[in-house]
Image (cartoon, rainbow, N blue to C red; front, side, top):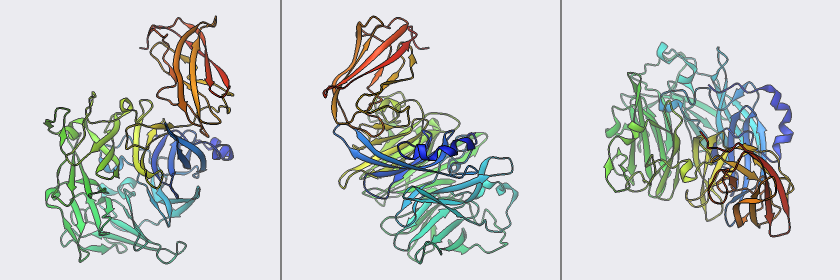
Amino acid sequence: MLKKISVLFFCAISVFAAESLVSNFTFAVATGPSTGTLWVLSRGDAGSGVTLVTLALGESQVNVISMKSDFFDQEKTAVHDGVFSDVTGETRRTPFLYTEKLGFVVPMLGLDSVESFRQPEGFYSVKTSRILETPLDEPIVELDSAYSSPMAKSIGAFAYDTSTSVLWFSRGILGIESYDVSGSISDPKISNFVLDAKDGSLDTLNRNKKINASENPPIFGLSLHPETSMLWLATEKGLYHQTANRSFEKVEALKDSRVTGVWIGGTPIQIIAETSAREESVTKSKLWRSWNGSDFKEVVFRDTLGKIQKDVYDKADYSVSNVAFIRNKAFLAVQTIEGSISGLVKLDSIGAIPWNHTRQWLYDVEAGVLNKNTILTSVAAIPLTDDIMGLAVSSYGSGISVSADSGQTWSHILNQTAVKDNLGTIRMIPSVTVAHGESMVAYKLGQRSKVTIEVFSYDMRRVRTIVKDVVREENAVRSSKATEDFWDGLDDHGRPCAMGVYYVRVKDNHGHVGWGKVMTLGGNRK
């Protein structure tokens, strides 16, 4: 369970606001209000809130220009306490969306009867880094006891219709809700609906209605088709799509499935659906796709030799957090149910794209997506420039990562101990390491430079050159490249250095020199 955030940190908002994420424990990334900006949702011991990050493309990495943050009230958050422990797909993700009219929207959760953040209370909307609360009343209805828990009524997904200025969100057993701001943001029209599984109609949810889950199946996720603006609904009783007469029809291939999520996008259009059900203490999951209007089929997982492998998604015990689309590729952020393995699954026109790796279809820390073994929590497509659509991922403990080349290379952005400009401070993180360990050399440049990093023994004998004359960009937070600028406790010959204190020198080609200090315990990392 996630820890309840301490109120002691909220006095430091002004300190964080200028140049850091709210926390390195991030759960969502989304397009910002302008090109080259993105929203980041955080929840960790350092606080819970959002950060607006402004980026610029350098020659070798994506650089941070500025960060502006705001915090949630300490008695509310946007990430529920069971996001990692829940065992079915629909409750293992944090829904989010960026809309031009409302800004960045995420759920608003309060404390339930056992002091856990699982009580749905509405949603947050964020514009220009200022958080606005939108409380929503829970419809007064009669429910079966199986659906009495707060999370059975939580927001599972958002969708926004730009043509009508309506924000839609799924509410589980409460169906779906529309938040119409076509007239005024300050005076929205709010309506609740349930799906009638018999005739496919979307019926108004009247006060004191008795909801029968077999007739009005819970709606876990939804999405709008970008070309038709028709709604697609992921329900406990199948996948439904809206028709020209505004009623809903069930997708034949998934008519008997418990569909926990649906995502639509890309060129040509892809529709991706996840099915997930708990059977005898085991979660059974499958991944489905319609490509360019074709019938839904299970996603193909082929190995590096081109041979199709069966039941990969279920055997790996994956669950989708979110999906990002860039042209004909889909990037799925997945994590294992009741486990800590996570990464990206990439789909092309054939299916999952493999690579030479222990887990052949998972792009994770070994592919450079993350800078250490942390849980990848979400992914989004971000316009970095007018011509370049980038990818951004969030992680539980390692900030965010951004790619400008569709996931080939990544820049890592996270909070660390402050360093001064022009190599004025050199930090080793951590300051104590072991052979084959990893201590990052943290430094900050005032301009684009060629950097050399060297390690010296206590008697000033050079034992290791980490990098030599490599290009590093100016960066408002940190110029280090986490995947390269680190010392592993070895000398230039690959031998473990003796236990002791070592000095680290960083030089640039503009005459700046900085020194840091690190201790190695020698030996090998266990």
